[in-house]
Image 1: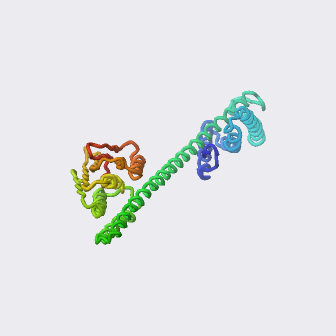
Image 2: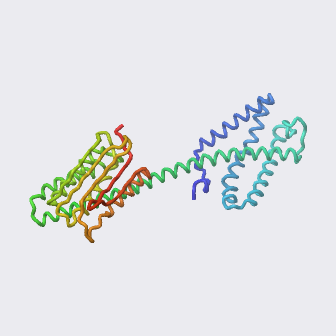
Image 3: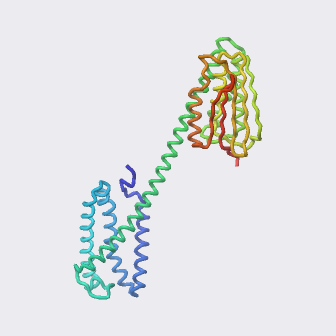
Amino acid sequence: MSEIQKLNFDIKLRNHIWFWGSYFTLNFLRWGAYFNDYDYSFKSNLIEFSLHIPLVYFNLFILVRRYVLKQQYIKYTIALLISLFAVYLLKTALTYYIISENIWPEANREYHPFDINHILAVCIGELYVLAMASSVYLTLTWLRERERNRALRENQFKIKLKYLENQIQPHFFFNTLNNLYALSLESSDKVPDVIIKLSNLMEYVLYDVKGTKLVPLIKEIDYIQNYIEIEKLRFENVEVTINLESNIEDIKVPPLIFISLVENAFKHGGLNNKNLKIKINCKIIDNKMLHFEILNNFVISQKNNPKGGIGLINTKKRLKLIYKNNFSLEYKTKLNYYIISLQIPIHNED
């Protein structure tokens, strides 16, 4: 249930005091100048506001909550009319005994209690104050609720994005540890090199990009190159080419956004493939979009499905969260090459 539905007294007390104090002062000066009688205006407004304020909060926190929110409009109307009549009796009695026996001096003629014109004038005045004050309160409450919802959506976005990032990292390190285990079984002298490079990768993931929305693209490229070096230790015949066709010194990207694409190239391209070839192209288009493309050859077989797994799925979800629909991620095969093309908006250092 929203805060507007609860109608909690959650606006700070000083704001209520400021509102009623300002309203009282303006009314006092307005009618004092109009009748050239500030003493009468002060007394009259003091009586009226001592009735306005309880009626407004009684309407908001009792009548509206009990009847309007439950769609019991007839009961609400009856209760409001009874409340207005009670206010009329109190205002008339207080005016008569405290200010003047003429209960409505503003009318330029003498009125008696329960005169229909006087009843209508008092009730309409109360309804005016009721509508204005309630509108201000509900508008402020709605604005606060909107801000709460925005903060909640942003927090949910961060949690979901963090969840996807955490899925990507263990997925990558699990694959790398498998590679290390395979080499250790062979008593390979490559194991120390793999451990050092893996340590560098873990340092980047655990420290350099932790809690960071954007990182320099050049660091992501370095990260990818370190990953490729590890994979080259596992694959005997692999050829990787990286083409940077634009100046990327000042470009920033979400951390670890490309690694799943590279993993996919090794994972599916390396199956039954004695001569794995991977090509990575990176360029800026019209100074607006970053185009990242990766191609790998693969051996066509029933077991080799180059569509990718959880890494690509999570990458697409992350892109959707970060860029909404302002990105492009396409997969296609051409002859025996699998091609992934990604386009995202660029972020500059400044």
